[in-house]
Length: 301
Image 1 (cartoon, rainbow, N blue to C red):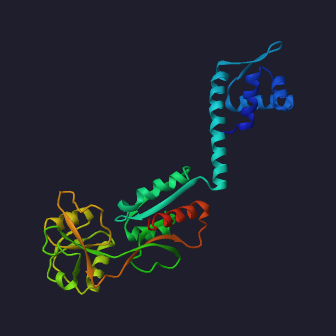
Image 2: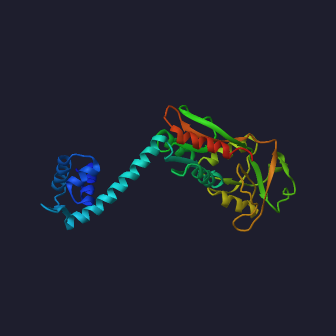
Image 3: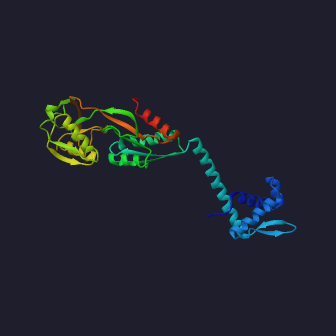
């Protein structure tokens, strides 16, 4: 552990710059005994001889003293940076936000949220983590994240704050060459005998099983994947249709297939995108600023 102080270092640097204790005393408006004691203490604590004492010419730095002065200069600069950062923390213009994001939402919103907020508050670091629903819940409960961007698949448990950001209606996705692709809206009856491609990611499978049940559908599962893009490619290849809550703006798939998104009649229950926090936790101005920023980002342009 470092046992000398920044004050001792400042006195040392003043003596090195002025060449004597009396000169440093006048510069700092500090008594000569205080400076002399500080230098003696610094030499004892570091085990270094920092100055050569000359009766007529004052003090000159030793080789060790010159090297130690370089380190002291760096130390004081670092301490000044810490002071500035500490002031920013007090004013809550600097800090970090630990943001959890449901994995299927991350590609659509995460990077724009981060880049937009850092333009407003460049001294705030956002540390994102892509997680499943269960992981998000555990991370909030254990205090490992500050906020979670997720779907409101079910009512939030007690002890949570929740802000609704958007409501989206799942749509049926078919291959561009599918017989139903010429339509803009498809009835549940028209999908009843079609094979289904299931998005089988953590948290997603339960939701889509519930959605199919809501619509009275129990299709044959022709293909399942934890990857949204693999599901889209499978649909484009003609393996079946799927439901997706979020769809990329392009109808093209990674393997150059093409898709068509269809509204569904009757319209499925809307799914909310929410920003969730933990109750009874002091969040501060930074978290609140990010919450306002996120709400603004989801407003219709």
